[in-house]
Amino acid sequence: MNASDFVAFDPNQERLRREAVQLGITYAFRRGEPDPPPGSGFNIRTATVAAACASGDLKLAVSAKRYISGLWDDIKKEPYTKLFNDGTSAAYLWNIVQLMAVVDGKLAGEADELEGRERLIAVHGNRFILFRVFCLIDLEALKDSNFDLGSMKITCEKMAVEILNAIIPAINEKFPDAYPGNVFKNQDRQAELLAAISS
Image 1 (cartoon, rainbow, N blue to C red):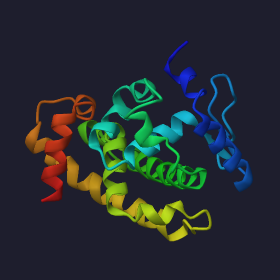
Image 2 (tube, rainbow, N blue to C red):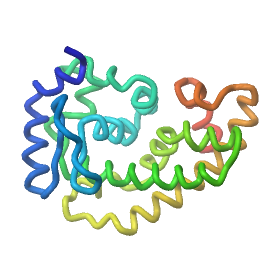
Image 3 (cartoon, rainbow, N blue to C red):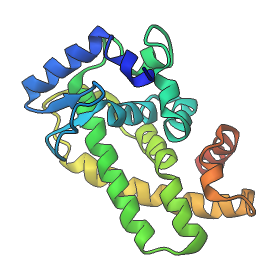
């Protein structure tokens, strides 16, 4: 068994699956279950990455990038219980997963227009950028299953580009010799980067 198998023993996961059905979407959390087609649902891995980036805790966002299984190690304690608990709703997870897809899509488009080191920053910085986007929007509103994501998606796309344009020069200045992929797997460097673009 691996870490993801233990997630299936959490009663909250089955509750989230039932809530998702009521929303007309599919939530797959057991290993071996097929991934829902895009736009019709999501899986435990996607939910975990989105929830980690929306947690407000940079350490969890870094873990989602570097070693996602570590977030599932023990379903009885944090970090797992910070992401999945009695207060976690399928509506909230579905909303943040959709916004993550929007940000990822926008960054992929930006990466296609870039070259070299800048392109690598756009590719490897996706979780850091998503973390920062989620820090800047009203996550509480996303707990409402009837929340209209239309304008929020546009806002998140715009923010993602602005953050990318801010971190490219910041990384080049602070870590000129570092491979971008390594920067975005290092919590201390990301904290330094976050401080640089937030000041």
